Length: 200
Image 1 (tube, rainbow, N blue to C red):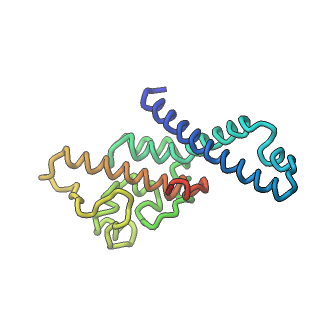
Image 2: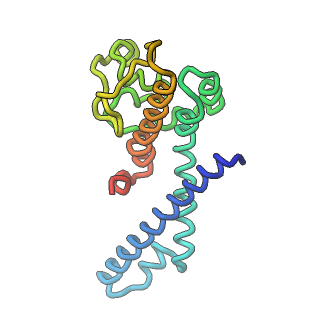
Image 3: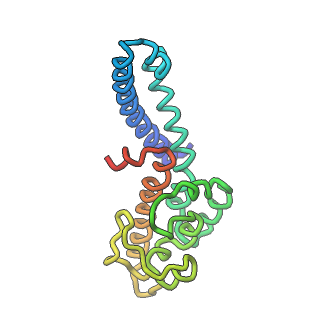
């Protein structure tokens, strides 16, 4: 496992552990409340949590880690590991196969450019800000306005040969990271059923 992969894995583990701890605490509050409604019955906790709170926490952590890795990995790999129109991106999409299409079923955001991950991966931020391309690929002429972290007033024309390469790279990387956040919030967290936790 490369150092970068290990760092991503650790970040996912940390988020899963944090979220699992929060859910365990909330589940225990709910169990206490339900038990009080049922005259202090210990069976409520045994049936919902099990005999060990630590075992319950471990199950939650494992489930969340698997969920994050299953849904987030294809999105992160396709957006972060290679630039738009590169062989690297094409190879990643090919190697992931159907996994790349998995998130499409769960995306609940309003931006048409993100409804099909393969399209965004192929065209990048041009699919958000180039009205001609949006019309051709998405059938929408208006440029994107309400995408997390993206500022319409700082859009640069990636095809403009006069734009310094550093600006082009910075713009692309920034928008790919913002796109990843959009997919996390409106796809991956939505699939997991904890969009409200993400908002907090």
